[in-house]
Image 1 (tube, rainbow, N blue to C red):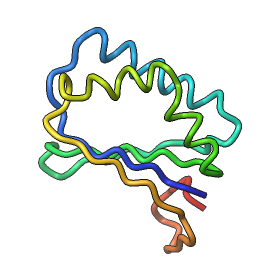
Image 2 (tube, rainbow, N blue to C red):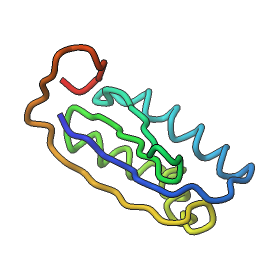
Image 3 (tube, one colour):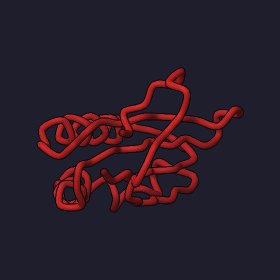
Length: 104
């Protein structure tokens, strides 16, 4: 399993942002290797993290090449006050089971 984290500081969103965001999430759901997404934010709400889980890197590549995703990436400076993407392989997860996660 792989995790693609999109860590960002929200800025001002417009109709185009919401259209692209909805299209990207809808496209992810159509991908066979898409596992799901978890979203977190810092205690002060200033930084958010959307963690998309995929079965393999091929699916991440398909996701990244989606036309609406590419368009959104080209306009990131319009909507965010900073961002970072981290792609990592999930080798292991563990815990007491009291915090649900889709990462397995």
